[in-house]
Amino acid sequence: MSFVRALSLTSPAAAQKELERIGVDPAGIVRMLPKLEQQALLVPQVRAAAANILKQEMLSLGGDAAVARGTVACSVSSTDVLLIGTRKQLLLLCSKLAGQPFGLKALALEIAAFLKTVQHPPACWQTSRRQLSLERPLIMGILNVTPDSFSDGGCYATIEKAVERALQLEAEGADLLDIGGESTRPGAPLISAEHELSRVLPVIEALANRLTIPISIDTWKSSVAEACLSAGAEIINDISGLNFDPDLAAVVARHQAGLVVMHTRGTPQQMQQDTGYADLLSEVAASLLQSAATARAAGITQAQICLDPGIGFAKDLHGNLELLRRLPELAKLGYPLLVGTSRKAFIGRVLQREVAADRLFGTAATVAHAVTSGARIVRVHDVQAMRDVALMAHAINTR
Image (cartoon, rainbow, N blue to C red; front, side):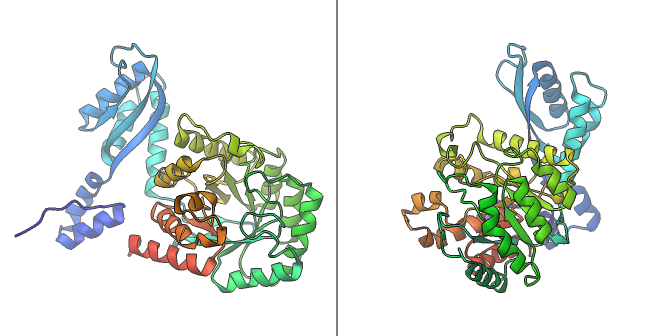
């Protein structure tokens, strides 16, 4: 007796492997793969007349398009449109839109570019000194040289302790080291650039010729970035997404450094007072893409940019969990995705673990999920354990 079951073919590679297992001939695999790549693309705020054309064209191709009630009668002025179809149907849609009015020709180009991005995700992340392969998930080890970080504040506040910890993280398997000199926990006070530099610059100078892995500096201040990049750092990790200091992008561009742009609202003192969203994913994605556009306008290449949705920054528990559930959407924006959940408060709330160091297993669950969902870099305190988690999750989904 046989049992019918649904298959979870989460990638073209997984679909091809299943067709090969069945014994489909190679030509048949080429024909069938597109049919197994169902897509659901959200196009926000389309004029009703254009939305009706999209729906008619998708239906004619055997797909569909979800629109708001009243769109057909044009009793609404605009609507979000959810295009539902295979990759092949969506590409055919692009060709059919080429001669259509209402901005649909430009939309066709955007859809085609998106489909190309999904098929060919970024393979490398460029820093000022090297290319980092994204063939497997990268582990970014956290080194806070602050007295007040939420998890390890004060533990590595001297140069000697910071250097010792950095070398330990490298030995445990960190692919990158992220050094922070200003706490960004909720409610943390801002400090001056001079104070921040007094904490981080001596550590970078001490490590620059000892570490073999890249150094990232967690800062939003252009003067701090300038000094740290000159001293040997290769990456700027900016929690503000280039929104706090208008001069930061030019510094990154001049040094050709790697750049992480993160989503947040307001400074750490204010951010947890502003956690309500009408559409969380749309706002986070739009903000990240705007940050990336700002970076590119300053001369930073697409290959240098990485996106971080800002788990724990201006999000409540529900928002953090929703972001994690929907990470695959953010992983398809055309840039490597970095996720930082390590020991964060939302894990403590779910598991009732008040002490940050007791959130190891909760962190492990989020790291595994992030990697499975398309994250290419995970930022963690517990490098050795989370490296095992990330690599195992990666192996399950690729081998």
